[in-house]
Image (cartoon, rainbow, N blue to C red; front, side, top):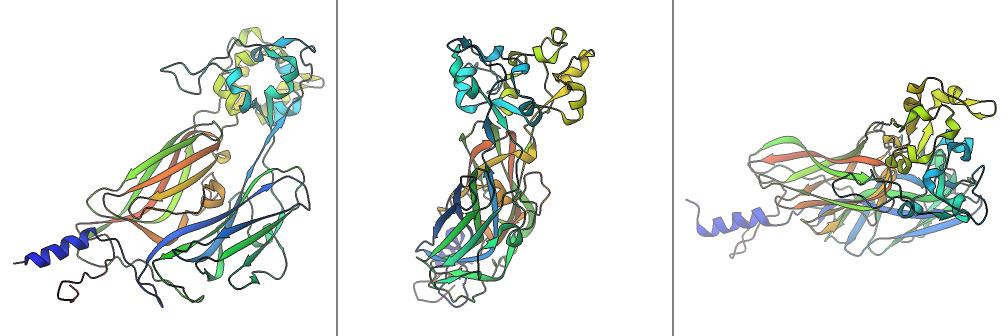
Length: 459
């Protein structure tokens, strides 16, 4: 029969925090971690921007891979073809397609997010947030060129970069290198670039990154991310140390693959923050090895109201489009351009059933943009130093990518929670962020350090 002291020791083992052995150092917790640097690009070739990543004092950081992503500011102001007379007022819903430049109709346009509170009424209780009604507020003609915003196509970015490790005072390249040559495409359609050898940055050191812009008129926020892991509670590590993986051996238990899913209803409102918590159940801890994501969108079709009155497309007004489509962005479908346009501009449609098939929303899964951060309540720690852009941290948005493999498996304790915060930038629909891994049923789900009894012996 188990003694009372042995029972207390076993109960302590079930609730003790995980302890992973680190080669060449004291015992410490090894957890995946991403360090990101951000750069505000102005679209001026030759402009130099820099940022510094500070390694915290709670442990060394080992980088195993590097990647990047670009959060482009695609909105451009639109000057209407025939603006309202100077000094007059107008209702945005009365604007006609003939007043919008052809380039904006082809590439896509939307209501400027900064004017949404003026253009749309507040959501009606019980109706979806995006299905609102147009307000009757009249706007001064001086603001007519800021109501509509053109959404330019995303562009491939070009820049030079260099990285300096302050702990050694050494550059990590002999001269500034081009992003495509060293990191690949900026849309995330690539595996993250693995370093030839893991690189250890000591506590309290800094990583200095410098960017030289090469793309003209391409504005936005650039993210460069170092992927790796932290060794918490351990001393300084030698630069050549190789960390062991989580040891999941222990008391008998059944190991099964398992996914935990966080869902976020994106509204398409820039800067809107949504939070979700994933509770880890009590039957065992969860070890996640990779992360994936995807956006489920509604139909891209645009239904036009009262199509029988608009044979000439030029007479179509914004009030005849769904308000959600005006917020998502609208364009003429590429395969309908020859039907919609003639030599002088917008044409006339004799087959009215084509009108509801002629336009499409710009709310495509591959265009979703957001920033995310992950928090583990079991250890009380963030898994990144700042919110990270989805392309930079997880890869391309259309799913044509390898799943993001964590540098080290991350163990979430039973009864703990995974908190994920998403800050919207562009895109509407249900966003799914999936933690892929496994759980151990019927046994300890963590690698535990032995518990010493009162007599000093380890049990």
